[in-house]
Image (cartoon, rainbow, N blue to C red; front, side):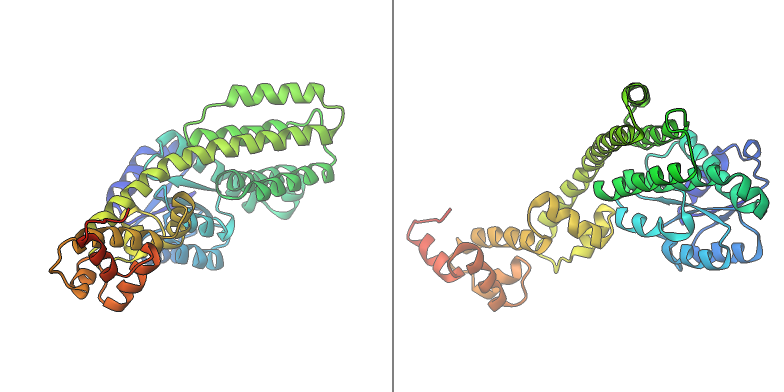
Length: 359
C-alpha cells in the first residue's frame, strides 16, 4: 500500500511521516510532497492508495489537487488536513472522491490520525475487490460509505442535512433486510457519534452506549429507535458546534484586535480573514453571525468612532479626518458618518465646540 503526504509545512509532513506506524498498517511506501503540483507528479507515476493533503499550498492548492486526483486516480482515498478554521474549504474538499475524513492539524494526535488511516484502508480494500467479492460484502460497503457521510453531517452540515443522511442510512438498513433490533449497525452509528465528538474533546462513549441500550429495550418498532437516534445525533451535533464556536471565538477576537489596529489602512475582508486563518467566504459569514453585522458595517463604526475623537481637534479638515481613519474619499466619509450619527462631520464638530458632545 502506498501513501502520499502533501503539505507545504515541512514539520507537519515529517511529523506525520515519522509518527505513524506505517509498517504495522501495511504501508510499504510513503511519499512526501511540498505542494499540490509535486503531489500530482507522484500520483501520475505511482499507484497511490491514500492521499493526505493540506488545503492551502503553493503552486496547486489542495482543492485543485483533489479535483485532478478524482479524475486520474479515482481509486485513491483522500484525507484532508488543514487549519481548524478552514471550514468552508473543508466542506468543498470533502465532496471529492469520497474523502473519508478531515483532520485539524493543530489538534490532531497520532492515535487519531492512525485511526483515520485505518478507516481509509477499509475504503481502499473495498475498491480493490473484484465484482463478485463486492456483491458478497455489500452490507459492509454500505456501512463504510455511510460512516463517511455521517461524520461529515455531524461536523459540517446543518441539523436538517444530518437527519437526511441518517434517514438515508435507515432506509439502506431496511433495504438490506437487517433484523433491526439485533443489528450491529445501530452500535456503529452511535460509535461514529462518539468518535466525532472525541475529535472536539467530547468524551461521551459510555453515555451514548447507555442511551442506545435503553432505546433498544424500550422501542416497540424500528421507527421509534430511529427517532431516538435522530435525537442523539442532534444532541451530539449541538455539543460539537459549541466546541467549534469556542475555537472560532478566539479567531473573532483576533480579527477585532487586528481591525482596531489597522483601521487607518485600506483594510479588506480578505486580509483580516487570512490573518485569523479562515477562508474569506467563511469568515464573512461567521463574522456576521457572531457580531450581528457585516465586516464593512463594523469597520465603518470603528472608523466613525475614531473620527469623532479627531473632530474634537478644531483645526483638522474633513479630508484630513477622512484619510486618518481609512477613507481616501472625503465625500464618502461624510456620507458614512452621517448614516451612523445622524449628522455630518461638520455639524458634529460644530456641536461639540459648543460643549455638547453627542453620545
